[in-house]
Length: 398
Image (spheres, one colour):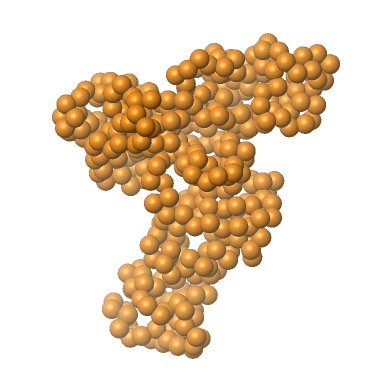
């Protein structure tokens, strides 16, 4: 199916604003038309700090794309990765006492779950709702069991939320650009969709990303986003700790780590060479000490994120697959195997490293979610006739 007009995406991540216009060809191929990427400005600590500056940047870059395409956009899809978001799981149940599960029963459950969200998360806006689990008489069922007889039905939903003021600010910015927000999508969710669609038989896994100043973990179960958590630390913690212990500044430490044959040395007593002491006085420091400090910090980071994270203990199983992204060139080059050792919990978990190239089709998959929905979303946006469950969820949550 060919789209009747180009599609405009704006990605807001921790480093850049990315403005992207594309089309989908008749043979379902992604065709990039225009792309502008600029350093992030006007957002500080995940909050919009300069409203007018962001508006001006959006107008300038969107107008530039419109001029090149000779086309005026009326709506935009936002892909966000730089705002405070949370994911909450709620369950509702209905006693059936041997009767059929009917649409009215689902309506009752959805109404009660919506009430819970509104009461407990009054300052949040729902971005995504995922069907996490259907249980009929304590047995898990893949699809909504409408029409089946049973005694007890339980329905678990996962709500992905954004701060309501952030949501209103984003809407206001785009309104000032004469654009309507068609959908806001969490980048963590779409990255999981990308992995599922690109890897046959993949549906349950962790995705961990370690940036320089922050980290986050996502857990997908049966293709549904089940857990998400962010951390205010990243690979810089390792660099800073090495700097503090050995008494060299950050640039010297980075230069030492980045040098060849430093980490993988057979001589434990070999010292750091004098040429690396550019700003501090030379003294004898064993190369092996850097490894010891780095290993201690990597182990600590792995424990905080996954191996000793009490929030995900029920999801951890032997041989669970973990996709690991080390978004730090030095750490990825020099301490990759160290990360694998600690994040695999001594090889109890399977580690697959990812890089940016593994998400080349991210916007294609994001567009498919916008156009046709995701099979685990309780509120799919589809162009075709909607199912009963889609209509029921849409009634209560839109």
